[in-house]
Length: 357
Picture (cartoon, rainbow, N blue to C red):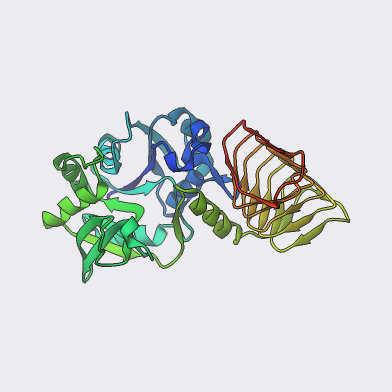
C-alpha cells in the first residue's frame, strides 16, 4: 500500500496578526495555551500519518525549536525551506522530493479543525482520487475560494468571487497524488505573484482528473485574524475539563470549566470558565474569564480580563476597567495610573509596555 504523508505549511508572515507576528511565528501563537501548529500536527498524527514535511520561511528557526524532530508528537518531521511566500502551490511544488510517489495531505498550519481529519484521510485512501478537497458552508463565500459542484465531483474553483455560485468555501486541507506536481509546474503566478493552489486544482479539473470533495460539518477556523483567533480560543476552551493543580484560597470563587496550572497562586478572585491559567501564574483581587487563556508566568492583579489571550510573562496590574477581546503578547506590562473608561481593547506586541493614564 502506498504511504500517505503530510505537508504542513508554516511559512508566511502573518501580517494580519501584527504586531504579535513581528516577533513570533503566527503558527506558534497559542490557542488555549497550545500553539496553533501543534493542533495541526496532532490532527495529522491522529489520522495515522507519521511522516510530516513542514514548509518553513523566515521563522524557520522558531518552528524548528518548537517542533524539533517530531518525537514528542509521535511523528517524524522534515523541514522544507521556502525562500519566499510564493503561494500554496509553490509550497507544494518544493515538497516534491519529500513526498516522492506517495499520496499526501496538505494542511495549513494556522487552521484549526476541532474534529480532526482522520475521516477525510480514510475516505481519500478508500476512493483514491487525484485530489480531494474539504469544503464548509460559510455566510460570506465572497471572502474565500469557492467550489462549484456536480454530483460528487468538483467542476470549478473560483477565488473570492464577486457573485459566488455556492456557499461552499475551501478549508485549508487538501489531499493529492503526484499529479499535483504537474499542475504546479503548469500554472502561472497570479496577480499577487503567487502560485495559487486553486489554480493548480482547477488545472487538474480541466485535465479530466478525479477531483472530489467532502463537506465539513463540525467547526473549523482560519486563525489569521484577531477575531478568528479569539473565536478559536473560545471553541477550544469550551472542551476543557476542570483541573486545579495550583493553589486557590478560600476567598476565590470558581465557576464552570477552569484549569489552573501547577505553581499558580490565586487569591480573592473570581475565575469564570471556560478558562485556562498556565503554570506559575499569579491571580490576585481579579476577575478572569470566561473564554480566556492566561499563559505561564503571568500576573493579573486588581484587574478584569475576559474573552482574551494573554501570552507568557505578561503582567496586568490595577487596570480597574475590563480588558476584553484582546490578544496581549509576551513580556507585556499593562498598568493603570488613573481612572479611564471601563473597557479597553488591545492587540499588543511582545516586550511592550502600556501605561493607562
